[in-house]
Amino acid sequence: MIHNLESNYNCANAGEDLHQLKNELASLRSSGIEDEESQQTINRLENQISFILNKCDINH
Image (cartoon, rainbow, N blue to C red):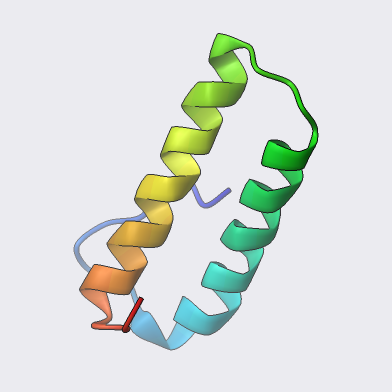
C-alpha cells in the first residue's frame, strides 16, 4: 500500500503503483477475511486506485 499519495503525486509512477495496488486489493479480497481492519484496508486501496486514476486522467 502506498502511504503518501498527495496532490503532487508523480503520474510517471502510475503504471507500477496501480499494478501493485490492484494486486494487493485482489489478494486481500481473495483471502476471505472480513474483519473491520481488512475492510478499512480494502477501502483505502480502492481510494488510492481511484485517486491515481483521476489524478493521472487514466480511463477506468
